[in-house]
Every structure is written in C-alpha cells, then in structure tokens.
Image 1: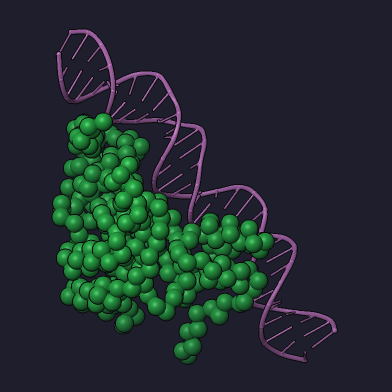
Image 2 (image 1 turned 30 degrees about the vertical axis):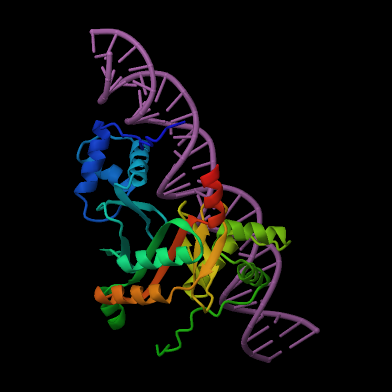
Length: 140
Length: 140
DNA sequence: GGTAGATTTGAGACTGATTCCCAGTCGACT
DNA sequence: AGTCGACTGGGAATCAGTCTCAAATCTACC
C-alpha cells in the first residue's frame, strides 16, 4: 500500500465555496457559521447552512481558517495566515490578537522530548483583559 | 446604598453542591457537566442536570473551577488547583503526563503585557505520540 | 423546637447550534 | 457532450445547555 500521496481532499471550487471564502476574506474578525450564512444571504449568495458548516469544517481541517469557541460556545471562524500562531483574546470584548510564540514552540518540543513524546502539536490560548476594557472596569 | 460588602453569593452548602465539589475533586482532568452528572449518578448521588450546570457555573464565576471548551465545543470544568499545570497527552494511548511550565507562564505574561492585556490566564495542551506508541506505529 | 422567608432543587419543555439524510445538481475529465 | 462522483440544500434529528415553577430545604430568629 504505497499510498504516499495523502492528498487531503482537493476541495472542488464551487460557487458556494468561493462565496464562503469571500465572506471570510472580507471579515476582520471571528464569525460564527450562522453569521457567515447570514452575510452570504445578504449579499445574495444563496448557500445552505449545512454547506456553510461543512465547508468551514473542511477549511479548518486543512488549515485555511482558525476556529475558536466564543464564550457562548459557538464555533467561530476566521481566515488565518499559514504560519502557526496563537491567540490572545480579551475576555470582555472579544478582541483578538494573533501572536506567534517561537518560545512556546521551543518549550513544547523540549518538554515533549524530555518525556519521550514525538510529533507534538500544541494548543495555546491566552485569555485576558485588554487595556481598554481594564480601564472601563476600573472606572465602572 | 453603602453595600461595600459585595460578597458574591455565599453559596449554601447543600448535599448537591457537596457532591459536585467531591466529583470535581476526585477527577484529575477537565470534565463536562454531563460527565460529572453521570459520575454523580454512578456514585449514587442523585443530582439534577440543571443543578449540575447551575452549580458549575456559579463555581466558575467565583473562581473555584476552571472552564474551558473541548474541541467538540462542550464546556468542561476542573477544580482550580493551586499549582497550575498542563498536560502532555499521547494521541494514541491517551497516556497523560502532568507538566508545569514556568517558562510558559512567563511567556504568557510577557506577551500579554506587550499588548496591554492584564489578568491573563492561559490554556496549553500538548498532544503527541509517546515513546511506546511511536515504537509500535513504526513497527506496525 | 418551631416558624417564616429566601434559596435551591429537579423534571421536563424549550432553544439554538450543529449534524445527518439523501435525492438532485455541478465540476472534472475524456 | 456524456459519465461519475463530489457537492449541495432543505429539513428532520441530535444534543448541550437554559428556563420555568412548584416543592423541598436551609437559615435566621424567636
């Protein structure tokens, strides 16, 4: 079984996929599948909700978009850069900053190594209070 | 209204609350409300699901437990141990190693600081292949 | 020990996100 | 242009989590 070619679903470029990609591209921040579906509606692109979910998942899997869960538990998506990165999220207003953490990468590898683990991937999420919100809470 | 004493609901110590606290204490890792509810059932503590959710939320609010969303989007809870630590999990056999990462803590704080964020908490999870499983996969 | 008032509980209906089903449609390739 | 399989979409199904409200329980006070 020399199936070396683990091609990860070349995702056919359909009208719907294009529409979703566009919606994603024109949004600055994380959006839920429902929001994307809505905005698609508004622009006149008729795309089924199921399709939006499916496509988003596929894109997340192939690394084209970032996924994260907002406080309400909804999955939200945003197109992302190829390079591996993490997020710093404001727990109050939801503002998100993309951060790269070579330090973390190194740490992860050394820890894994120390315990004999290989092929390590990691998830890091920082949640805090952005300057703006901190100021408001302080005065409120 | 000189209600300076903003005591946040002194949470009455009922049988149910105690049961949930115990379940949380005897669990090493994050558990969903449903799982806690189940384990409570198993040990014979009859507690309603709604109560589990309510209590867990209250505890999260008062800082007694950590909340996070697992990949499936479910909220999961873990009692807040004093010694903050992370996990290195084998993606094949599930073996878990507890790790402390002062390096990560420092990094998290410096990154947060850099972006004006305060009160930062972080979630770090390393997933890899333990030595044992790596050997088996290699030979299999 | 007993009573009143406030809090907590629990069963189940409800909500809203996400997935499943499956027949019809569309894109890649010849 | 024709074939075949991937893709789509409407709506039902699923599932976590929330809400409602009467009954149970607890605390404070006498």
